[in-house]
Amino acid sequence: MLPTYWSVGRDSRDIVRIPVTNAGEQVSTREVIIVEALHCFAEAGYEGTSLNDIAAAVGIRRPSLLHHFPSKEALYGEVFERVLSDFIGPIEEAAANDSSGWERVEVVLVNALLLFSAHPDHVRLLRREAIDGGTHLGIDLAAALRPMFDGAALFLEGEMTAGRFRWHDARQLLITGYGALLGSFSDAPILEGLVDGNPMDEAAVLRRVEHVVSFFRAALVP
Image 1 (cartoon, rainbow, N blue to C red):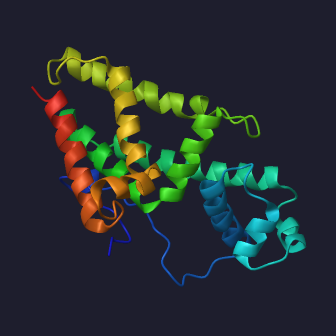
Image 2 (cartoon, rainbow, N blue to C red):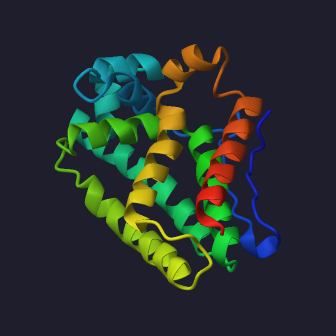
Image 3 (cartoon, rainbow, N blue to C red):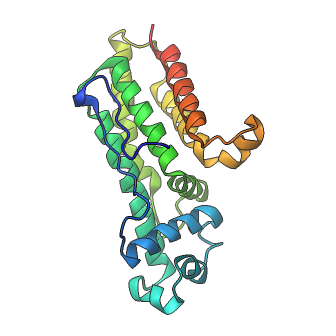
C-alpha cells in the first residue's frame, strides 16, 4: 500500500509531505460533492457530465446538490481551483528545498510523480482542460502555470551556464518533462494495454519514478 505521506530528500530540509485522505475519514457533504464531481469531470469531461450524474455519485438528489453549488459552472470552477492548489502548492514547496543542482531536480521529479500517482483524477482533468484550451469558465491554465514554468527554466539555465548541467533548451526540456510526468497517469488505461499490467500499482509507479529520474539525470548531469 502506498504511504499516506510521501517524503523525499536527503535530509529533513528536503522532505515534502503530501497528505492523502484516509479511508473512513469524516468529510462534509460539500467535500464529498467536490470529490465525486472531480471524478465525474475527469472521466467524462465537462460537457459529458451532468449535475444529475454528480448527485447520483454522491447519493443525494439534484436539489440537495444545488443547495451547495448553484450551477455546474460554479461547481466545476471550485473543482478546478482545487486541482491547481493541490498540485501547484506541493510542487512549489518541493522546488523551494535547500538542495542545489541535480539533487534539487531529483526532489521535484520524485515528489511530482508520486503526487500525480496519488491523484490520477486531478491529472486527467488537468489534461482535459489543457486540450480544451481553457474554454470552461475562461480558465487560463497557461497563466496559472507560467510563473512555475518560468522559474524552473531560469533555474535550469543557471545550472547549465554554471556547467553543472549539460546544455539544452530549458523550455523544451520542461515541455518534455511535462508530458512524461502527466502522461504516465492521464493515459493509464492505454498504458495498461501496452505494458501488460496495471501501470498504477505501487511497483509499477516506483519503476516509473526510477526510470524518469534516471532519464533526466542522464540528460542533465555531465
